Length: 422
Image (tube, rainbow, N blue to C red; front, side, top):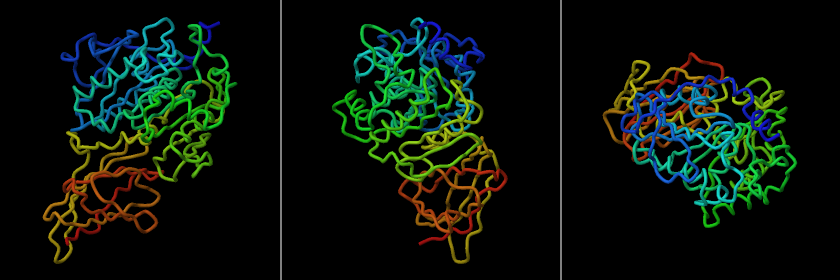
């Protein structure tokens, strides 16, 4: 029975194409390919570590830990369901670490007492060694470490963010369960009550269970995005609501959505805590879909929620379009040069460089229905219903940037309307 259940966890993902990863040391690793790191630190459960480093890495890149389903592998998920993460890494310059479970069934340990305690042992300790290795070898921004996973990997995403809330800034879990839901006793690796959606707790109870995993922590918890298909019978859809209870409680926000929309047919997206594009908690329910997520287009929404489409400290990538300088207004002494990128999925990045003054204000117009989702390296304010941005320096230099959602208009690009000084 356990073997059948584990096979079911693979779902549609079992059809993903698996390719052999080059077995080389980190020092021999080549960019833009999945490579194995053979020595990365404490590893009590004998996990394998693979890393994807794009050809052009951001100056201070984000790090994404991407975890596979039961019966899966790093190469299977990297070249299958999570291939779009690699495409995004190529564009935005972030690093991806793919942990790989090696125990029978290739499920991650989300059930043992060791795994459900910070520093307790088992898989989470090995994964943290991978995070520390990546931080030290790739100049990773410690404030931009994220986790994602599907099925068993989604369950581990919940566990990692609860075990190490000070390490991870956010997560995106496809078909998971709340942290501690899968806990077992007597050495069992399967919790049929949890998988069947029969465990229901209050938001406070779920939050307390997660807080007990790292009892000394008193800071803010990571942002969390959860996905689930309504007809999932392997990890029952009821777990979707239980995850939302847990993470809204940990984030200190209400369980009533601050916003609800339908970004695609059959999807219902709810945001908790605020009505922004990156709320503390986001849930996306997919009607009529079983244990087969993510499907086409979903990774783009995960990338945007996590903020991986923000190069952060700057990128070595060449601009995808020629810069378009603004015309300085009469009497002004600054110029804003705008470089909008090409559309990836439903979003694109724009960078702006100001010359001629260190005390400037740049006004930028956005074409409706496009909307800005993420900003960096500037002090931003909005007017005109959110379609006009006024940007001032925030002490981080004369370059700033932002990410824009196309919302169906893929041809328009932002325009600099003025650059003034003083």
